[in-house]
Amino acid sequence: MVRGAQRGAPVYSRDPRKVMSSTSNHEIVDVCPTQIQPISHYMTEMVQVDQESALKAKSSTSNQSIVDVCPTQNQQISRSMTEMVQAVQESALKTMPSISNHSIVDVCPTQNEQISHSMTETVQVARETALKAMPSRVKMDYLGICAAQNQKKHLLRAKMLQLAQESIPKVMTSPLKLRYLDVCAELNQPVNPFIAEMLQVDLEYVPSSSIIKIAGNNRLMPVKRVTDNDTMVLAKVLANNTFVKGLDLRFNTLTDTGAEHIGKLLQVTPALSHLNLMGNDIGAEGAEFIARALHHTQSLIALATVLIQNRTIKSLNVNRPILYSLQEEVTIHFSGMLEVNYCLQELHLSKHEMSDVAVERLCEGLERNFTLRFLDLSCNRITCDGVKCLATLLKQNTALEILDLSSNRMEDDGAMHLGDALSMYNNNLKALAVVSNNITGKGLVPLSNAIKTNSTLSYVYIWGNKLDEASCVAFADLLNTGRLTPECTDVEPYVVDGRVYLAELFHGLRKHYYWTPSYGVVDHPISNSSLPIRADYQSFSQD
Image (cartoon, rainbow, N blue to C red; front, side, top):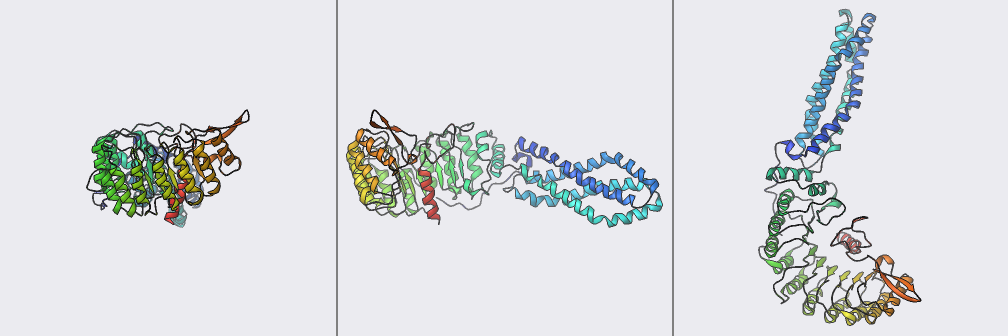
């Protein structure tokens, strides 16, 4: 990935109202008046200070006059107070495009002079009211007492200023959302409410949320799918940022034009290390744009070539590519990349129509790789011969912790090869998925025996195979003895007329990968067991 300098950083609009939505404006205007009651309380105390000063002047004839005249000045006092609150609001409006909410606290003190002026006017009204109501003989005494009360009034003034400032950051919108609204106005593009909602997170101060998820299959909230024009706006919003680490745009309506905008974003944003574009309408031309962004060449072969030198990308998903050749060139180049890449931890090669020959070449590269933890080879054309190569690789006790072979053609012979490798030779693999591989009890029983002796393998998924009585009894025994827990497999035993059967559980490595639930928790670990395993090895690598 080309590392772009910070030149060409975003230039924010000078008009503060362009960078905030109408709701944001109203929020500030609405919330500030809620602070008027406590501010009024402090102001009333200040007025009382002046009244008490006059009363202490011991002018019994003027005391009642002071009390009577002061209420007549309420309108002018209220006007001065409104000016003070308005000055604080203008401080916030001038800082709305800023990257940090904290800048409001920094800029507000620059308005102290204006705020202090308004407050001085308010106190001056009360003082003039008192002076008008008292005879000349006590004016000198009154002014002397006022000087003695200055310290108390300064404390009240400081409390009022602090309260006015604290009322502002509570209504601030995320800087990313504000930047998005600004760019939409600049490019004359309509605001996508779904994008605006998902950007309502201050990523600079919440590092754990540094992946922006704008997946079009989100069923927990109203979704307006992302278009090519939306990606043009997003590319400008996220350009040159240093805190967004990932972008999830799955299942939207992006075409080659949107891929071009994403490619431009990749060129100027080296901090972006995770990108998911699955389920869009991106063709060969769009793939070339993204490949050029990673390196000045084309296609998946170029992508594999780039990764030879790349030292930042840890996860790569190239599922379901549009291939025009059956010569396995892509897999061969990825094999060469894996031989020398010591940073990549996760590789998804699903739906590549990968044959046994390609798997053999891939294993050659994995023999020299000691960092890859998650290998996804699901939905390919791998038979027992290809699985035999993988079993030989596992016997060498590689770094692999998750292996997904779902929806292939391994059958019983392939399952027996895996059982042989896992029973004695491997103690690193933690999760194995062999869903829908046409395996019968002849292959599943040896696999269950391997699980009994292998204490590391904790997640096994077998649904979609031919679960005859022998395989049902074998896996029921694993569950009943506690070797496997119901949360770590996708089958559950039950007995009818003395015979053991297995029922399906909605558990798996990535059940929520292609869609999100309509209720409950997104990415629940029971249905997405690869997530906690990934979190473990990612945290280990950071340590």
